[in-house]
Image (cartoon, rainbow over all chains, first blue to last red; front, top):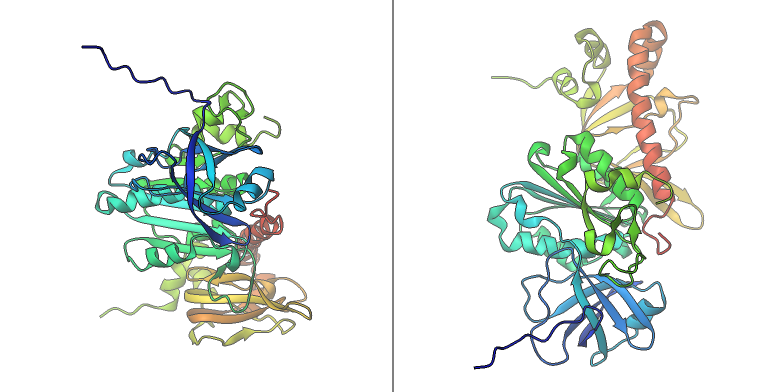
Length: 282
Length: 155
């Protein structure tokens, strides 16, 4: 009987996916829901990983996976339309085909946090890479201590996943604090920097793990605020973003000091990366 | 039966941690507990700033009015935080309007009297200025970062 040998997978070869739905999130962000072109199951991923999305004839872009890791039906990415590729992806409609490579990168260390409090701090579209982690934690809610989501964004109109945030708030087992940088007086919520929420958030610093994703300046100040509150630096994790090309640690585009963000990250612990964040040119 | 006094509330607040009993007694001497309903204006821009507040619960919006954009909320002050520092800095006038968004329970403290006492008792004056310098510095830092528009597409 002949041995069955798996066909080798070329990490540079995109797999075709069909767009099932394009959902508008805010004025400049949208969510793509896709399924494999061949009808098979979508790729398995861990919270915090990313894919390379290839818009044929235009180019490829690294996008964090923002769907539910337990969802065996769809592959979900939330994208901000800022460049040629992402603006092209924004124009896609159901039935369009996109090339997908992935998943890549080191995930959030969610499985190591059993019994601990989780403080999740998101800034702007940084909520998208954290969404799979939140969904993963909620799928086994009893296994964790307190879960707190602190979310800062530009204005009330820029709040990502607003309906889902409202549904999560209604669960009563998840604390969600949202703040915006600016608002008209019809906004009844908080206004101020996301770091101001750290002082209002209910968690026990000694048994807390923090997951942070957002602009680097916001992450720097959030890390400092968490340490000041008593959270151990080793328990703080953040997701970095750089211009990724090959996604497998070959091309060097995403090199950050001694690491390649595509393969060593994008998720790092604070001790691994904090020193580099303070350097002006890395 | 035990009573929670204003002095014990103030003493247990991190902002006042480490103050002597005598200083706490002076600080709370003319204080009172207040309950403020939603939409109440606590102070208006330009009015004399004579008090400050330890917000125990609720939410207060600091607002500024511009002819083109109308009223804008620039910051909210919430449970556990201190509202008001203009009483400590000349010309002792409020810089913004403060409006209650969610009903507030607070302790109102007599800033004008503390300002005067701080001129005589420099130890007390130093403690107050030191604590408020930290608070003002943090709010300035937050404001500067907010002004960077971090969540814009260019960041």
